[in-house]
Length: 359
Image (cartoon, rainbow, N blue to C red; front, top):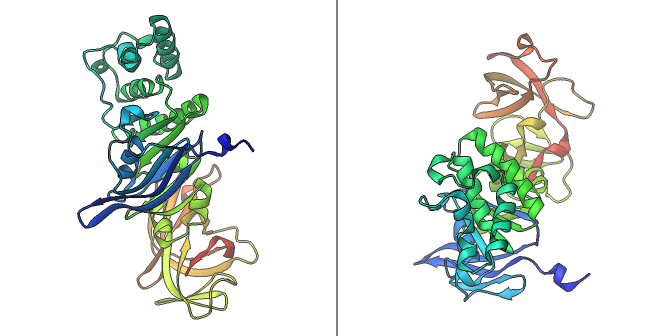
């Protein structure tokens, strides 16, 4: 393999950011491959924005190195790094039209007028704003202003584009639309995107890889399917999506809850009998009908039914203090009278391979 092709677009080597006695980021090692849509995901204060700012040069690491395409840029200012940033606030110039906002960076670089017009036109077409070149930002919708900010960043052809929660200010419907468009744009231009978000659905929808951060460290890094289906820790299981988390003691293929029945989880060679464990089962992995042979079967009482259009969520009390969330799709064959209601006793189950046991 060509050595250049294997060089990560971004490498963080033992990077820390310290404020007084506390660490915002603690000895972070991370490689981001060229051409990937990579998301830093985590709750507020986990260090994801601090990490992004160190990649962009807006903040100096307390220790460690930042490398872009194999070059150590730790000591370089933002304008000398081949990166651009899209902020949540858009940061557009209200007195300039759309085309002039996009062209701003090119003019500062002295790009010839003919090339400037061509590149701006191509970029406006890419973000579907070709007919709005002369409009002022204040006359545009939130989604259109976000597209202008994206075009202004991409027109400079950075090797890496940093995006700091750029969709957070949009309403839900527009945010979902922009998620799809942003991923399509990234694939078309082929530039490495590093995206900061606290929104799990956003990260799962757009990313090639996700780093889940907690307290300045990476808890898990992998594909969206990896981190969702095989969380490496209790934190990842609880933060990414919805999960039924229970604690108990593992013995011979079952987990005895602190309060309640033993849960069949299957044989686990990597967990010793008597170990204290957490059990995680996703709501959509639990079946309330059409059971299959080999499923672990339990019984509980429905305490709440929540209808949400495409899905219905049932809250089922398994034992005092132990309530599970179960998600069912409202398919074309599903009828309102077929739904369970509060107070009914139901049987439910799951396949052992869908039950995650964390030591």
